[in-house]
Length: 206
Length: 206
DNA sequence: TCACATCCATACACTCATGAATGTAAAAAG
DNA sequence: CTTTTTACATTCATGAGTGTATGGATGTGA
Image (cartoon, rainbow over the protein chains, first blue to last red):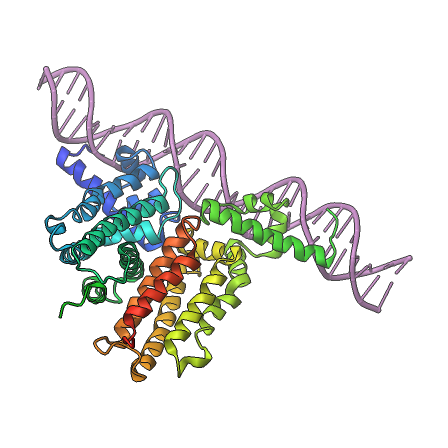
């Protein structure tokens, strides 16, 4: 076959990653062959082995396409008004996180990571999830600790406990939604959840 | 090799299932071969193909060893004092559920189902999780609905929302714990979570 | 005790996926 | 315009895993 232009080559690379996303999500990572990915992108395995060393390398590349925003999701927690209105900051961070998760690519890749792949060479999805969960928990502990010092938290509640409560809820919502995203809108139901929980956790000032 | 007695045959069957549990949990379902399972049990693949038709059949048999109590976990929700003290009933159901989950076999099999296997022939772990989640949610909706009619629930809270809140928390806790059960005791942290949440959701009667 | 069924090991055939090797036409570099 | 490199396709060798067929020794029922 003829050589393609640089732009075309980059396009086929993206097409291969797109195809990998779709088929990984559909049939699971272990059960999909590089042949299937290539065919679904209108290519052959030659193209795959040109752009990636092997399946693990392709998988990593697929993750890399969302890794940056993946981090954003956590960095977003480093908001401005942490010091003054931590509960409001949590509300906003969740809002933006849900919005981001609704983008197809984010949703797909996270669903693959959590529900459609097992341990995989050097890549261990479970440890990635662990890091994610712990970082989120740590941030929430900071928030609620700040809220406690500002007197915005119920006095009969440890900040750490409040953080674990919210983190578990978010984690559960996350898993349940990724399992079947057509069941409900994570943005809508998530904000309902977060708001009512924050209302329950906040010191009643009305 | 010589024929074994009936009891010995049953023992090797159990040994094969034990081996499968361990290796599935360690390396994931897709990456483990029947050869590895057989060797780990001190047998050959001949034994595996005698007791099970194929890998999927073995997997199903592994699930069957805990399916009955798996159902118990849900049936347990059908408690007596639903009509009089629903919140207390939730407390007790969670208590017993956590205790059950701490048994190694339950923990292992659930961890495999949720974190160490992908879609798999006719077996779809995700739909199983979906059913589990929906049944739990339905039961909780009943409970909180009952609590609301009894005036034991905060009046500014929909029963269904309360149920979703608790269900998400439990789901998140479940996933997080199964990912790394040495991080914390699900019984201890779970009961902390449930109790504080129930306290927050209950109508303040003090 | 004798025939038979059972429990498991061994051997074999087959598929499928991988990865490397090779081919090749066109783009890019000079 | 020539040379080199790129971006794939095609082919081939290999191995891993599966499923089946067969063998064989021993419990088991009569």
